[in-house]
Length: 567
Image (cartoon, rainbow, N blue to C red; front, side):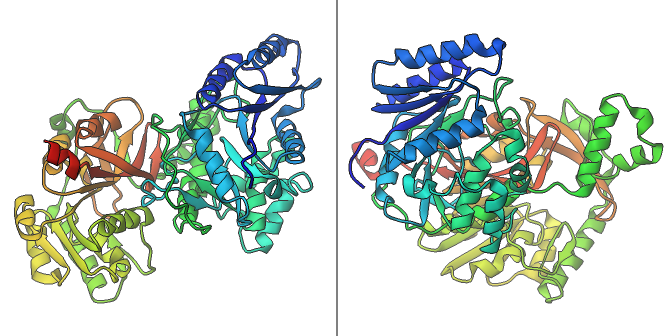
C-alpha cells in the first residue's frame, strides 16, 4: 500500500462535550484528514446539540475536515454503513471513529502502521485500537495479536475488506459463517441476539463481526487498549449498558513491533470471548426474572415455593452478611469438619491418581480433559521466560488439584516442579500418597523456597480465606520470584473490601467460613512499586451483584543491567 494519507472517518451526532474530547485526542495524534458524517436531529429537542456538534467540526483548524451534514436522522447503524461505504469507494484504507471514543497519543500511527503492513494480506480484515483484559491472551506480552472477533471501538480497514458489507445483513452473514463451520455463538452468546435485532435497533457492528467470520478474516489487536469509551451514559446510542467493558486507565501506546505477527489467530481468543459473553443458564435467567419481580414489589406474583427456590440456586457459593472484622465473620460461620474434608479430598485425588478420574476440584471428580486456559497461558509464559523452566509454589493447593488438572499440557517443558504449600494434615497425606517426580508438598513457604527456588507463586482461590491476606501477599511479593498469579479470586465492585460468610453446598461438604472480596486497588497498588500487572482475565467462577471473580498475573520489575551498572 502506498504512503497515501489514511483518513479518520468520524461519526457524530448530538454530544458536543464528548466530541470535544475526541477532537482533542485526534489533534494530539496529528491526524491529517477527517471525513466526518454528522447525523441529523431526531426531533426538535436534539437540534441545539446537533448544531453545537457541527459547529465544533467546522471550527477545526489543525487538519483538513470534510463534513457531511445529514439532512435527516439516519440513526447510528445507517449513518455508519452508508458513510463507510462511500469512503471505501474513494480510499484504499481508512480508520473509523465515533464521537465517544478517546485514545492516547500514538494510536493513529500504530493503526496506520498495521494497515500498511497487512494491506496485501487477504486474511487480515481490520485493525483495532481497542482490547480489554477480559479478552486479551495472557501471553500477548507487549506484542500485537490476531483475533477472529473484530470490534467497533476505533478500527481501521481496507476497501477490500469492507466489500460486501452493504449487501447482506447480520443474519445472512451469520448463516454463511455457520456454513463455513463457525457457529453463531462461537465467539460469544451475545452475538446471535444482536444479529436478530440489527435492523430493528439500527445497529451495525454485529454485521461487521459476522462479516469477518463469513470470510475467515482476522482483526489485529494491540497488546493493551489505546482506546476507551466515554459514552457510558444516558446520551449513548447503544453502549449505555456496557460499563462492564470499561478499561483500566489507559497507558502509553505500545511501540511499533520489530516484526508484526503472522496472520494466524491466537489460540486463546475464542475461549476468552466465549467466557466473557457466556450464555446465562436457564436457572439463572429464571432467577433473574423472579428477583426482578421481587425488587419491583410484585411479591404476590412469586409463589412462596419459588422464593424458597431462589435462596437455594444460583452461584454454588452462597454469600451472607457484611462484617467489619474477621472475628465477627468467624463468629457467624458454622465452621467445618476438617477431617471430613481432608478425607473427601484424599478420596477424590486417589481417583485421579489411579486413573478413575482425570482431575478434581473441591472433591468433585471430572472425567473430561479441561484446562483453565488463561491460567495455563500464564504459567507457560513464565516458563518461556526461563527457557522452559517452571517451578510453581502453589499456596493452598490442596493435594495438587491444579497440577492434576493441567499436567497433560506440561509434557514439553524441560524442567518442571509443582510444590504445594498446605496445612500439616494435607502435607502429610500428600507426602504419604501423592508425591511424584514433579509434585511435592511442603508445610511452610520458607521450606519450599529453600528446596525448590520457585519462579512462580500461584494463589488460586486462597487469599479470600486468609485472616490477613494483604500481609500474606506482601510477604510473598518480597520473596525471590519473578511471577505472581492470583487466580479465581473475588473482587468487590463496591469501592471497598467486603468481608462476608461463604456457605458451601452440602453436596460438596457442609461448611461455612469467612470470605473476602477485595477492593482491587487496595490489594494490588501496594505492590506496584516493584511489580507490574501484565495480564488479567475473568474466571469461570462468574460474577454476582457487587462482586466478580478474576485472575491476574504480576511480573517483578528487575533493574536492567545498564541501570545496575550506573548504580
